[in-house]
Image (tube, rainbow, N blue to C red; front, side):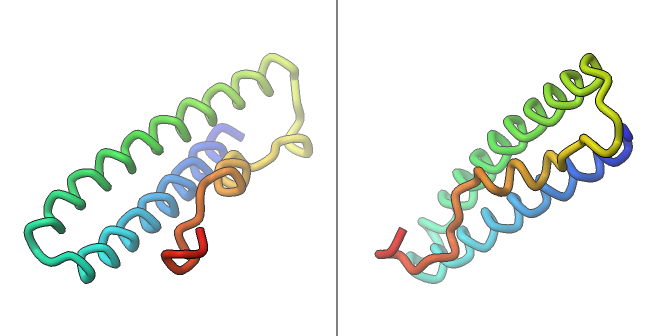
Length: 96
């Protein structure tokens, strides 16, 4: 069960990081090289902050389930929970 939690956590972190990188690439095309370098730095910092939140949430959820004695049938994927709550950057610029 612990392995599944960490796999889900890794998947969620990977998806969040992928979305951040895609957003940075999109912004880079619009702004140019100098501002792109700054944006990549900010995006990396935001991705790390998001990863910390995801990790702490997954650990807290796992500890809560462990204390409650939840079986495998009651474990909800931490990755699915985080992705439902994460902001989406798929919409065009004016429609967010």
